Length: 486
Image 1 (spheres, rainbow, N blue to C red):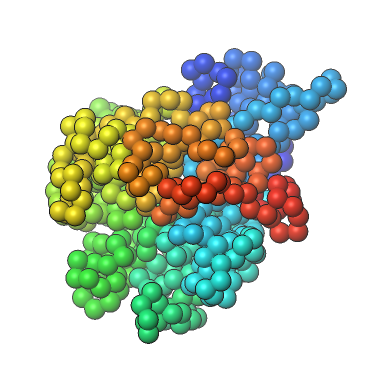
Image 2 (spheres, rainbow, N blue to C red):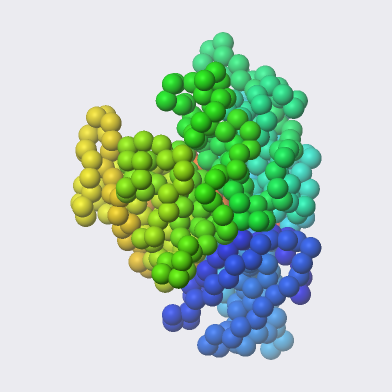
C-alpha cells in the first residue's frame, strides 16, 4: 500500500453511487504511519489511509491509487483489458494540501514540498517581495515534508511531518507567530504611500508550539490544533482592533482579539476540527455529557452577527469560547466572514450568522433573519439559528472571508453560495467551467483553488468574477502534467 504524505484530521464522506453510504473516521495525520482500515459497503471496498478515502470498485481490485491530498487518481482498471470508469472521490474535509489567500495560493506536492503562486507583495508566494504577480507555481525554499498548508489574506503557514509550523508573508499583526520586525523580517511597502510593513519570504519557525496536526488561517491571524486536542492562536483576529490600530501595536498588544504570540485558547479541549474566519473561529470538541450530540462546536471571537453564539456576549467579542449544542454531529466546519457552517454526516449543511449575501443558504431577510437590510447602517442581516443551507449529498465543505461557502458533492461537482455575485446567491450554484474536482482547499477572500479529479491538476477561480476558472501550469510541464504540484 503506497504511503500517503498528507491526511485530514477528521472527516466523513458521502459516497457517490452508494445510496445512503457514508464513511466517517477520525485520524491525526502522521506520514510515518501506513495504517489502513478496509470496510465493505455494497459492492465497493472503502479504504481509509491516514484520513484519505479510496473506493475500489467491484470488491477491491487495484483500480485506484492514493493521491497526495486525500483523494484518488483513476488507475487503469485491472487485468481484464477494459478501462474502468473513473471513480470520483472527493476529500471529506477541506484539503490540507492546498489553500488560497487574497489572489495567491499554495499547494503541497507528493514529496512534501510547497509551491505558491499569485500575489507576492509581501513574500507570501515564497519569492522575494514584488509587485509582480507570480504566474506559475514556484517552489518555496526551506519547507520540506509539509503535511498541511493554510493561508490568510497575505501570509501562509505550513505544518510539517515532524509537527512543527513555519510561516511567511506579511507580519504587520504578528500573524507569522513572532513580533514584527524580528526573526529576519524585511521591510515592504505598505498599502498607504510612504508606509512600510514587516514581511518575509523566508519560512520562519513558530517557536514554543506543541506538536501540531492541523492549521487554519484567515485575515491576519493563524491557529493550530495540537496533538493533545488543544488550540493555540496568534495574530490579530481583525485587521484593525476596536481602537483602529493593528494587533500588537500599543494598547492592542493584548486582549481577546489580539494574540501577539501563540496563545492557548482556554476552554477548548479535545478538538478534532478547526476553522478560522476573518474575525472568529470555531472548533469541534468532545461532547460534554451523554446528552450531547456526538460532538459540540465551540466558537469564539467577534459576535456582532451571532456568528459565534445566539446568546453569549451579544453584539460584542466572545473572549471565552461559547459551546453550540444546537448543531448535529459535525464532520466538517468552516468559519467565513461573520458566518459559520457545519456539515452533518447526512450531507446536510447548517449555517448561522451573517446572511447579507445569502451565505446561510436563503434569501436575505427571509426565514426569520434579524438585523437591518441597510448594510451601511451597521449590522447586516443575520440569523442566530442554524439554517439548512444545502441538503444535497455534500462530501466536502469550505468557506471564505468574502462571505461565501463552497462545497463538493459526492459527484465531484463544486457548488458555491453567498457572495458569489455582488447581489448574493442564496442557493448552491455549480461553478461554471470547472471540471469534476476531488478536493477544494480552504480559502480567504474570494480566490478559491482545488484539485481536478482526473489528474490532480490545480484549478483556481475568483468568486463574483465573470472570468472562467483557470488551470495552473505546473513547473517543468504542460497544464495537467501530474508531475507538478498537487
